[in-house]
Length: 317
Image (cartoon, rainbow, N blue to C red; front, side, top):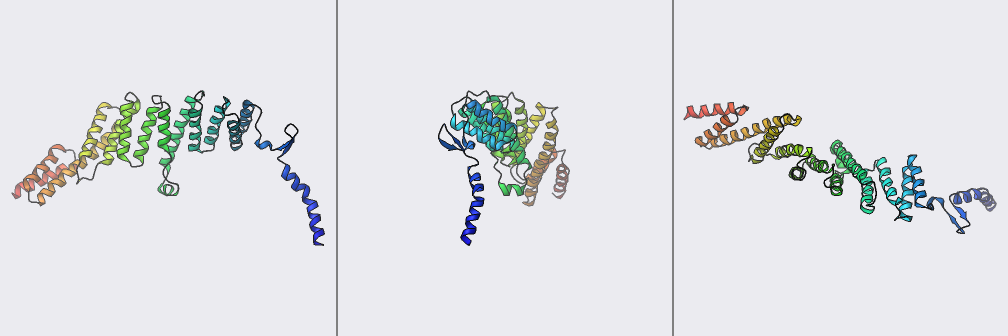
């Protein structure tokens, strides 16, 4: 009885399984084979490109990428191959897969130098770099721990520069490499990259901004008040030079505030040195440092404190 029921069930569902199994296969007399249309390439590279573009225009990006890759595999030397590679990058960018999109755009430049898309691709790569940089700014510590901090921003911008070293986007790309490093707290490396902007693109608008950032990076690297203040002095001088060269720039207001902050730190440093000598009973050296605060940092709160200390030392001696 069980065998009879099993046989009936097989007979009932057999047509369904047969239909499902062969739904994607077609018999072709030309080849005398069963073929799956999903994997068949069109008879010309242009037809294959158009077929992929039809999927692209309807927003079916995965299917479009599949068809473009067929073209690359079957017609690798056709002129349409460059367009197929380009549109793979576009599809990936539309899907938000930015770094993969960048890699595929770069393949057009590397493999198909005859492509008319050269300038457009550089612009798209630059925009991807900007988007990745913005993404890094928005990330919080939790996201850093979860997915890491390496967004390949530097790789993207360096490639933009390599592709067109003196193009209109090169200076900006170099500036953004430095900005990314500064954002990550890698200050010496950031400073070096900002200097490249000034040295390699002195006539660009980014050179002026880079000079400001060099001084601000020095300010970030300046040590606590009780230690050597050489970097702080360099930062102050850099900011003063920037303000002198760009008196009306919006950044000059920020530069002036930073100068005041750093001068306050320098004044505090001298005051602490004077206090150290005072504790060591070296009152002559102490008075020299207190006097330096009074003479050179009149506009800081430390000048008043130093003046009181000088008076105390004079009376006590």
